[in-house]
Length: 219
Image (cartoon, rainbow, N blue to C red):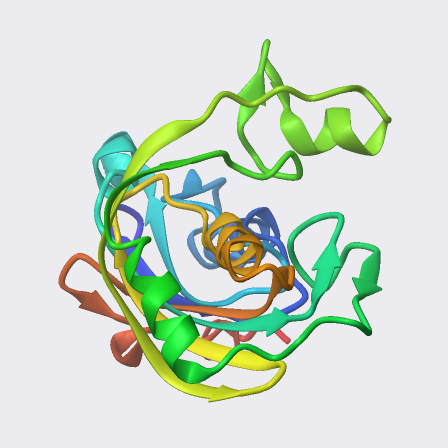
């Protein structure tokens, strides 16, 4: 456990760093010394699901784990926008938005499959001149994040009942599902934000194999 890769099912309402801090405390108490702990790819506080945690000597491999492909399930709230692209921002409902048909959504969704250009959210962990973008955004500093190329291998509609669209998507590392939700809403002309997000897989690791914080005695 001192030098290992842990699969954790992150709960909603907690930062990825919060998970790291709790596991570090538990392991350090268990071994009677400070154990180095890190995570391999941030999950937003509102999101749940698979978080890869590295401890001890395994921390040197964190960069490689971060670059792996991922699978998510997300609920996109159509007909509304958020300043952060998720439920934690300031929500603006569009009462005039016309619900698109499933056929319209299917057509638009397929436009986002393949290699696409995406601009990450300003409220993200991306570093701008050494500072986290979300720290700058919260202080009212103008944040200019350049667009990037990402790959969406698949994007399937699980369920649609206005205003909620549930999707499952397999994407390359660096893809922001919040941005994907916002871009889908813009393409439909109704606006959207990511209301719920769950990471199901990272490469061959599945959240079904993950442990909860309760398994570590953390409540």
